[in-house]
Image (cartoon, rainbow, N blue to C red; front, side, top):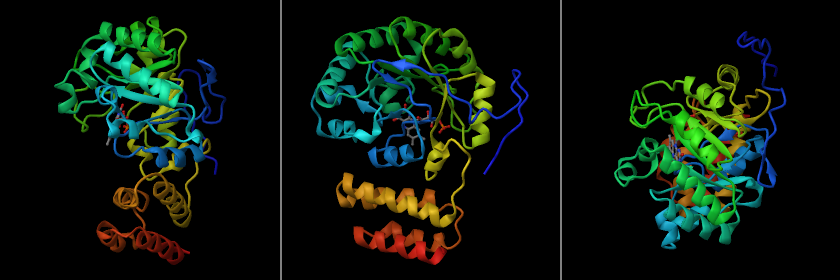
Length: 337
Ligand SMILES: Cc1cc2nc3c(=O)[nH]c(=O)nc-3n(C[C@H](O)[C@H](O)[C@H](O)COP(=O)(O)O)c2cc1C
């Protein structure tokens, strides 16, 4: 399928989807060309990351993990760090409040898991995090983010990236200043979700800030994020902001093929094939009952808009037996053909 879009901005008049992406070397690896799956706690676990990688997703991120939890060797936190070799290069994302805390947590995982990068979460708006001076709270303190980057890097020798928002509260855009400070402190990549921490999801992302950050940062890649759902959106974000890679969150739920270099919409049957593969990876990775429960939301996302899926949703929501879920998927797939 060829979906070239004519966009006449900044002198570009053809699709950029198939043009080579700019090259960046980070530590001892090269930033993959593919667009990037946004970290989403509770969704972008190792099985889902691997499925997106099959379609071409670039750098991957873990879900956000508590630096304090890691320092205390919390089992749940360590469990979230686990990744498969297929997922490299992968950034492990930490949330916390103090440079020391990040540096110690990163040292623990550097030794145990040797990830390719440590990412500092500076955007999470969840109250329980912000009230503990973590996540999005940090957007109010650019210098502190710089210290976190420098200490984490010095402690581990690993590349460090930051995931920013536009700012904490409108109209305080701190992203550009923070990006410059982070780069000077040794950050290897900046991702930016173009929304304020205190903005609700109902407001649209304003990509202007991504372009501003791209202009201000000298040598490291800038990744744009916010409200990208389609290949046209990918195209538009690259053209409007000049960002080096595009990061996709909610638009990738149940749609891992969004990472294909060429626009490609699978048939319903192909979608269920992918879902089956995804489920098999889940069963392999987590306790079966967790896989069954987590599968429920993936089933809804993958089958959105499919005729006959609605009647199965209710059943899938109740089943606790892993083999029964598999049976439903296989039957559904046969019915579609
Ligand atoms: C359910 C959910 C969980 C998220 N968890 C994280 C997270 O763990 N770390 C993080 O940096 N961002 C997290 N985000 C934010 C996304 O990474 C992304 O920045 C945001 O969804 C905007 O991109 P989108 O418009 O493509 O969805 C989460 C978003 C959602 C919807």
